[in-house]
Length: 385
Length: 98
Image (tube, rainbow over all chains, first blue to last red; front, side, top):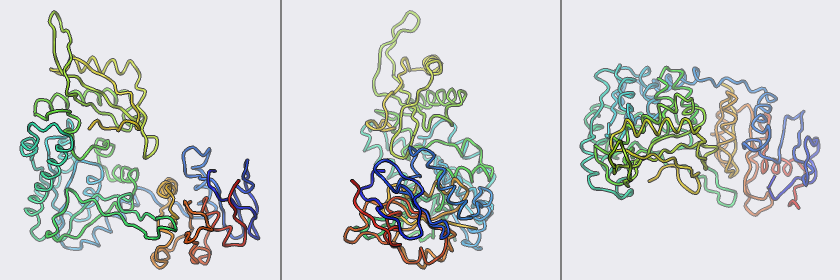
């Protein structure tokens, strides 16, 4: 109820349906004309019972609730078929939810007309690549997993600056994407992409800044302009949670559908300091233990929006048996998103943290200390780099 | 399939409104308040939701309620700025709050 302006007298035919302190007309309605209005914001979380109000309105308006994951999936498959016709299409899987669901919809629509590829950067979490390969290997010769890990790791040799890591990974990704796209392009007219609604939705300026802006598409790694492919974007009207529901409805495994947001630059930015195959292996092992224990505690999907390990660029002293150790430190990061902008560190039970810590120092060579990040966003960011 | 159009008057919550509608298994699309009416009406919306916005309805150049919204004869829900637009357009009075 923070808005400057208020309704002072109702239009003819309207009655006041709510009022509050300092606001005589917090809501008004004309039931005969089916026009309803609220001074407050029912859509925001902190409005008590607010999120139920849009549902009430839809019921009063007699709008039929027909937007179900199965129906959405069927409609999208048919749409892809219509758009592509008998032409050929290519698709790039990033390892994320969006591209996986886009390809899983394109697969029944296009069958042998579709070729897709997945780029293994060598910077993925444990099992991430294997899960993608398992989900799409039914495509047979129409699916290829490109192991570009040697190229990425060579680019990252001795690079410790996070911005430089990002720049090199981005540049390499474009080169690999371009190479694969050209290899598969033969006759292809379309590129299937996992663009989602928040990427493309029109944003309206206020009245004073009239221009309605349309965000540019995010291309997978940046599409070379001379490839001349038309975009197929089956998810462009879906929100993330709907993408997950559709993914489940068409039978993608939970491991893919519920995959956490993962930075495009991968484990390179969770491996603070230099990125070597050995340090990546250490990080991957610690990260896998953390996630397995959290999933066992039923926290990964329910309470925590993101949970991952970070390998720090410092060594600390420890003791193992009778000898002194001087090994690396792992930080555990686990956050819960309450909305789009902020995240709180997850109150993981101490016992669970104890299990994760002792498993990591016992099972992962080269780690003798585990710390838990207890900073929210803001002021910290979710990722460390 | 029945669908709802949400007109965005510059609200930071416009996408959140759309998500609330989708949570009720109802399809909706977001349009800027000054989008081409033909594009909006081509979808044959069964209802309109008018978002909030940062303007005052009396500010010079403030966003206005497109004629097609009330002409369509379908239910309308106005939120915040959307309420003020409805009140002003239909003959009520809107003033700065205390």
